[in-house]
Each structure stands twice: as C-alpha cells, then as structure tokens.
Image 1 (cartoon, rainbow, N blue to C red):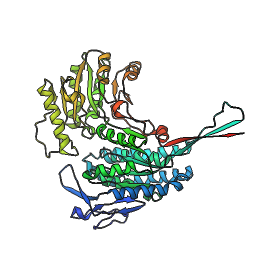
Image 2 (image 1 turned 30 degrees about the vertical axis):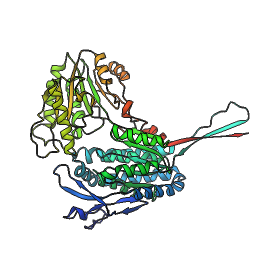
Image 3 (image 1 turned 90 degrees about the vertical axis):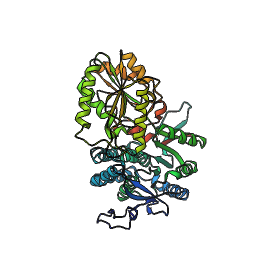
Image 4 (image 1 turned 120 degrees about the vertical axis):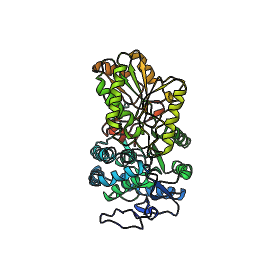
Length: 494
C-alpha cells in the first residue's frame, strides 16, 4: 500500500503519526494509484482520522473499465482449474491475514472483533473456497431439437466487464461477493467500495493480487461522497460494462437500477430489509429471546438482515419480554461498551424513530434513548412496544439498535404483519413444531426464512437475495455463478 510511512516486511504499511502520510491507493490494472484528491477516513469509535484515501475521478473510472475490458479476452479463456487455483490461494492468503484485515474493519466501521476478524474474514475465506470448488461445474447443455437433422449446443459464457458496488457494514463478505462470482465465471470486474471503509476494500484487491489474479481482472475504486453520482454514472453508462450488482439501501438501489435500465443493462440487487421474527406459543422462549437479541443488535443493528420486528403471541408475550430483557442484559448490559454506529446520523435516526413512536403512544420496554454515551456514535439497544401502523418505525428500516415488539393474537395475524412491508429479505419463526415452522415459512414474503434461528443468516452455499423492494437476483452458491453467465444457443444442420 502506498504510503510515506514505514513498511513491514510483508509489504503492508504501518500508520505514521500523521494520518495524511498514510494514503490508501486505488487499484487499476494491477497498479496502486495515488490521486491528488483524497478524503479522510474516520474511526467511528472516537471521531479521529485514521488515514486518507485516494479519491477516484471519472477519468479513473474510465481507466478501470479500459483495464478490465483489455483483461477480459485472456481471463475468459483461462481453464477452470487455473481460476480455481487462484481462488484457493486467495483464500489461504486471506486466512493468513485475518488479524490484519479484521483490524482494518474494526477501525473503519467500529465493529467488534468477533464480527470482524471472527466472522467476516473466516466467512469470506469459506466463500472463496466454495466458489473455487464450483468453477469446474459450469457447463452448457446439448438439447434435442424438434427438427430432424438439426442439432444444438447451449453454451454458458461470461458477460464481460462486471461492476460490483458494495457497502461498508460487512466489507469482506459483501465486497468479495461483489466480484468473486463474476470472476469465477470468467468476467473481469470493477469493485466500487464505500468511502467509510476503503482500506478494507484495498485489502480485497491486495489479496487477489497476491494470489496471482492477472492485472486488470479486478480494479478497486472509492471516492469522495460528492463525486458519487459522476463516478457511478460513468461506470454504469460505459459501453464495456455489461452487468451491475449492488448491495445497499433500497433508495440508492432504485437509482442505480433505473440508470442501468435506461442503458438496458441487467442488475443483481440486494437491498434493505424489515425482517420480522415470529414467536409462536410453543416456542422455546429462551432460545427465541437470545436469537432475537443477537438478530436485532449484532453489529449495532447495521445489517440488512437485522431483526426489526418481533411478533410475539399474546399467550407468551409476558414471559418472552422477561427472557428478552435478560438476554439483552447478558449480551449488551452495563458490563459491555455501548454499541458503535458508523456515524452519528444513524444514532439520531434511531432516536427520532423512537421519539416519534412514543409521541404516538408507543412505550419503551427496554433501554434509554436519552442516556449520554461516550461518543455521539454510540447507542444502547432499545426495545419499543405498542407499535402501530401510523408510526414511522413500523415501516422504515431503522438500521440501528432498535427493535419493535408487537403482540399478536394468532399465527395468521403474525404472518400478515410480517408481510406488511415493502421489504422481503429475511425473517425468522420460532416454534417447537417443524411442520408449523414450514407452514409459516411458505407464507412469508421474503427471500429467506429461518426456523428457530435469528434473521441474520448468510452462507456461501445458500442462495441469498430478496423479494419485493429488497431486490432481485441471487448471490452465493450455484445461483451466484449463474448470475454472471449468459447463454448462447448454437444450432447446425447435420
């Protein structure tokens, strides 16, 4: 990494006393590029500047596409075994650098060590290994034609240059995923990372480069917020970019999808969520309470799959609340530091959602929004009851440590409320009867339903994506590879 500071023997730089001496470069055509325009990256735990990052311009965007376009003919023709070996080597390198990369994530996003180096990095390692094993399974078809003396082959071929846009909150899982399946299928890529965690995204490029991925196959960009529209538009509208995948908010996703649509380019979208966890009368309440505490407040609630509503049957609501409060206290109580959000805006948003709900008749069951924490980016978990449809918190994704607890009188009512949202990414059902769980799961309008587990569940071997305004298309598993392949039908006269 480019820097004016010292460099360790493994090639990774240390931070000097002046954070502006430690500049995160872009990666274009295998070269680390420092730009004259930079932006500061702040540690959300204390507000101090960590380092500066190079900021891509529209010229850099065009250079990245040109590099990817030039690399495509050769990369698309590499044998599956060669691609597999690069992915396996990248997985080993990532595993060996787990502590380093986990530290970057903790510094840039304020995440706990368990979520950074203990979860994001190892799950990314597993993803790379899983994808590596699937590369050799890519195959076409030889259908039987209806016309005599006519034969056909259906080939599966890569698109070309793929643009992946990924967020800050789980930078390794979501960043690697934005390019890994496309690369495995023979495409070349541009990874546009967020301004909040550029060093994490630099590290993704670094891992692949160290693993021997040819120059130009992966180009990594980030930029100042004020340059977002120009740089993103340049990438989407470039004729060489053939497909876009985006993970982020529904609002931004709709803008990107609209622009891609104007250019007739296919998209894969994984967007926001408003996940419900349904607790039925026969549920193991302790298990449900612990799972809901983790599902609602892991990573300060800044996960698209976070539990936003807990729908509890009236016959067990009192006992569940007792168990839920106990679980929250055990995990996030006074003995633990207040969870960190990446910006103070997230705290203010959640405080406003709670205040508006309370003004309209809701009650705070657990937590205290008015409590002053060590920084403006910290907020302890809040559980709010009595939530109704006229409250913003009923409809809006909080993306923070706030969850609504809603009492229901029947299974049908729980399903109706779970489906009463424009989102449909994930959900959970707690019951001791698997048949009941499966019956409910089939009726919930979401891309995933987890029985007796928290709403946050994402594995590289399971297809992942949303219904409704939570997006379309699927990452992960064989479906993730298929997203980045297009078919070509070839016929001939025998």
